[in-house]
Length: 379
Image 1 (cartoon, rainbow, N blue to C red):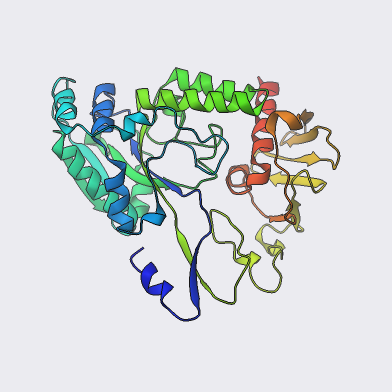
Image 2 (image 1 turned 90 degrees about the horizontal axis):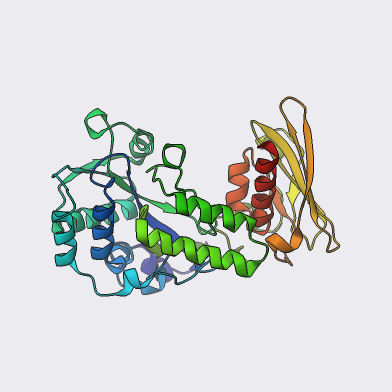
């Protein structure tokens, strides 16, 4: 981030924010180990936390790169809302937070805070978190290591004495933080869920209701209720959002807005496809419903497709499992509101459905609805 002003002054170079929604910077809290298995401790941290201090530790005075205050969902996505944001915008009260810690039953257990030394933004926010924890009376065991070690250790559900951990800072793309279906950290299914393993039956119920919502207005209402519940139970800490600029040569124009650099979209062949050598299959394409076509996926367990005709009819899905059984169904177009797109079809080469869901926004809602229907048929 500190090189951006220099790049802006360099001849033949310009910087561009290719994803205006900003990356979500958040802290994962381990609900299996103290002290974050204690709801009152998590609520006390939220009361004391200042999102501005976290984002300033990375962007400094480049305020155009910061998005605060911010809630769960990316501000450029339909599910973005302001429900419960007063929990972040009211004056911070460290004295009250410290008192809440003192009366919570906290017994002085250390917060094992993992900090990746090779990821500057995550490291700087980890240092801000350490200071915050100590100011409100939490003991901190600050452990600097490389990011690979953090990724390996975060999978451990062991107690602290057996190599467990307490918290770490990470980030999430705007597409992953688009809605309750794609946001992996926003689950309440305990040990079966994402790292941190919070248990929250209400969030799980609201998430199911979001999947079953008949229209966009109902989806938004469910998203607001989910965010309200998030601020009550604090499954993790939303620290801030940051926009990452990209440096480009001045002769490169019409850069595609996306969460990740798409090098295939630059140069003389703006919509050139990936090499099919990635998975030894012919080139395949994902298209939105304004361009009739098929959206294929391939994974270790299933292969299938979602097809949207040019007409306003429903989409159709098919799935073939390893044992050869085939399932078919429809994806109601109105219930998922796949947006019209004027851009040419996006090239698609992904081995896992998880990656497909994360990186192809025009098709993301339809895929989620398709998966939900498949899950129902499997029950």
